[in-house]
Image (cartoon, rainbow, N blue to C red; front, side, top):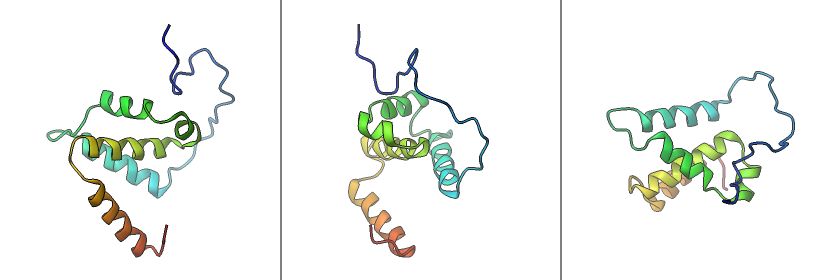
Length: 106
C-alpha cells in the first residue's frame, strides 16, 4: 500500500473543524483573484489537477503549518516557475518592490 501524503487525512482524527463564517482578508481575496485569472480561459496557465499536485507535493512541515491561502500562493509560485512563465529573479524583484512600497524589509 502506498504511503499517505500529508494531505490525505481520510479516516484519521484531524481535530475539530472551525465552521464559523469569516470574511476573507484582503490578501486572501487577492490570492484568490490571481488564481482565478491565471486559470481562466483562454490562457489557462494550468488546470485544477496541476494545482492540486503542486499543493500535495508541499513538504509535510510546510503543509501542516501553512494556512489555506499560503498553500495556494506557494503552489502558484511553483507552477509559474515550473512552466517558465516567470523566473525566480522576476519574482524576487517584484517582491522587493512590493516590500519597499509597504515599508517591509523582510
